[in-house]
Length: 44
Image (cartoon, rainbow, N blue to C red; front, side):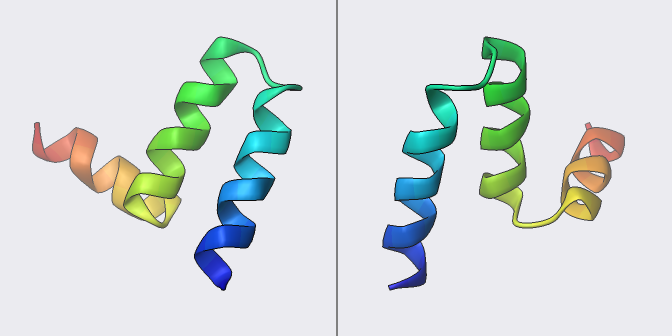
């Protein structure tokens, strides 16, 4: 249930966002939290 609403919110936001913002959003939703994103970048 949560996932489907998240997907719909993402679809809706994609029509508004710029490509750069979309990439940031995709990274955020993939990792779950902004902390995970920074941790992953530091690990690379």
